[in-house]
Amino acid sequence: MQNIENKNPRKLLRKVALAAIVAAFFLSAGAIAVDGFFDRISASDVAIVLGSKVNPDGSVSPRLAARLDKTVELYRHGIFSNVIVSGGTGKEGVDEAVAMKKYLLARQIPAPSILVDSHGDTTMHTAINSAAIMRAHGFKSALLVSQYFHISRSRLALKRCGISSVYNAHPDFFEWRDMYSLAREVVGFYDYFLRPGDCASPVLGQQSL
Image 1 (tube, rainbow, N blue to C red):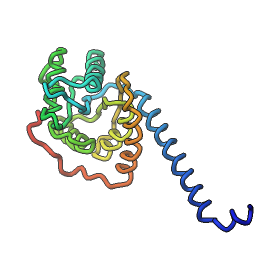
Image 2 (image 1 turned 180 degrees about the horizontal axis):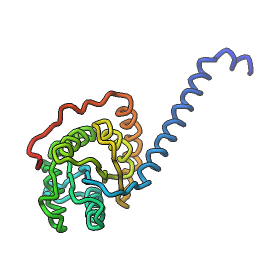
Image 3 (image 1 turned 180 degrees about the vertical axis):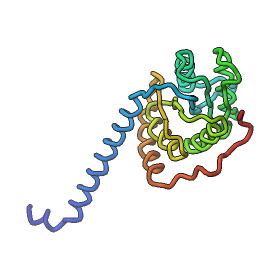
Image 4 (image 1 turned 120 degrees about the horizontal axis):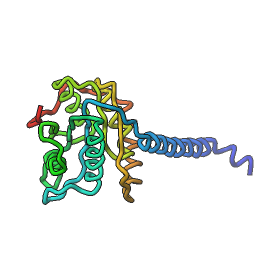
């Protein structure tokens, strides 16, 4: 039996490599989750709320509502006085950022405090556009608000775009698809980490600058 195993070193090597990859994946997922659960809340010039699904009637999904409710809570505690809402237009045909602004307005966040990025179609686009908006307003620090699994990649993208003071908070909202989202974030984080970030060309449209 020992002789047979010795004749298949490649097979053994493949098993070891596969085990290492699986272990690295789960360790990375755990690190991303812990990082996202650990809120770093500090007084900031602006909050950046990343978009998520909006329903065809313009109402926000429970996941997005949780992000916005967390933003309202922190705003009322005086953590920041301005908010960037960033999102794209999904298959529902509704501008996420506009829907997010309406949600905040209904909760007494004043319109002049809400800056709209309607071209945050990806996490990197949100980072690029938010950095441009921050520069236009002289903002130096930002507090990210998103689901826990999304924090690490979002913070990395924003720092790649020149914003060094980045804090974060997550809403206490969980659903079964978080498991899939967390797995996807492992791939997404390393993709952002390994490729050079291009933050020179913001995708700006009808943003409130």
